[in-house]
Amino acid sequence: MPSSWNSLRDDFPILHQQVNGKPLVYLDNAATTQKPRVVIEALSHFYERDNANVHRGLHALSMRSTDHYENARSKLARFINAQAPEEIVFTRGTTESINLVAASWGSANLKAGDVILLTEMEHHSNIVPWQLIAQRTGAKLRYIPITGDDGLLDLSQIDRLLTPEVKLFAFTHVSNTLGTINPAAELCARARKAGALTLVDAAQSIGHMPVDVRALGCDFLAFSGHKMAGVAGIGVLYGRRELLDAMPPYQGGGGMINHVELFESSWKPSPERFEAGTPNFADAYALGVACDYLEGIGRARIKSHDGELAERAYRALGELPGIRLIGPPGERGGLVSFALRDVHAHDVVTFADQDGIALRGGHHCNQPLMKKLGLASTARASFYLYNTAEEIDVLVASLRRTIRFFGG
Ligand code: C6P
Image (cartoon, rainbow, N blue to C red; front, top):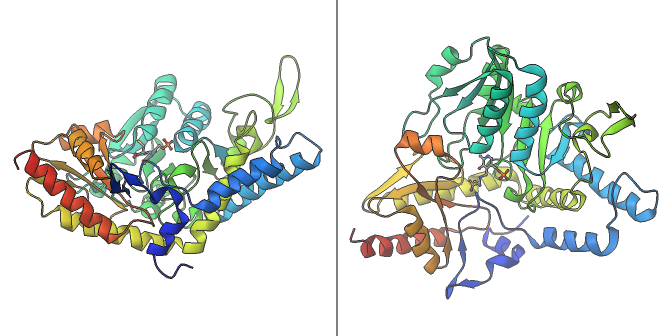
């Protein structure tokens, strides 16, 4: 375990560079996190020593590669406390995981009159797949509202909205724009009581806090490797085994069949059923290494570190003239969104970049949320285990210069 958070920065080669003549301050971790050296080296070692296709060969390299891939699955199962590795389906990321459930479970289980319950703070990845399947099946979408700029779910509405027509309730664990940490276990329990399945979008929680599918009591959970110190192009769909084994395939191809005839085929059980074609085995292996890295630090510790930075940033930014802070004033995930009066979020981000600071500006794939807040965009600073309190000071000083430039 590291003696100090600052020493962890040495694990991340990319952080040690200048951008526009200033030390890089990377505050765009909600978009993607940086990768520790152990993950980068694991990938290059894999390609230097072990690379071969998985589940297909009887030669040594293929068996080694298959072992790496299946060991990674077991690690991911332990990482989220799933009952069995078979409950872990490797996908390209959160977006593909949610599309898989919407297309596969949705096509087999939804009909006209059914309802999918979502929330107003969902990322487009947890809205559009449901719109697509609703159009195909005649099911309807329904939304739990948020309370306002403090960005909490209006839980007083939940009993009214969780009617017997609701077949599935899909919600984000942590909002990528508001920073709200939703009471996921309570939401799952209430949905279960009302007879609905649950899908938790863990894109913004998985690398930042302990995530235990059995403690949450969810039926499905989706996340991306690149937001948890792994690389892009690999992610996970967790599903309870009996649900996955009852769902039809999402895509057809090699690896997912038991037997193929010219006019019909039969499928393997989960997870192979949902992994048609050559899977992203090298990046899955590297994701297992990322899990080990995060476990070595401790996810409860990461949660308090990121949360403390976000609360500190919320307080410090709150003192800037003309700022509108979005999201809960109290406990929050590791990010802060804000709008500066008279300054477009893209200008905020461009000016920060001149000071070596990486922020994100835009609608963050939350257009319905932006509309609700009456905003076109926000700027967002998002933190991870290698960020420091000093970097928040650098951000605040830079924003003061931006505000002065625009006459604030
Ligand atoms: N949010 C952000 O900057 P993918 O692209 O599949 O890895 O993750 C999609 C996704 C789903 N749900 C939530 C809550 C998310 O935050 C994201 C990705 C990035 O906020 C890119 S828009």
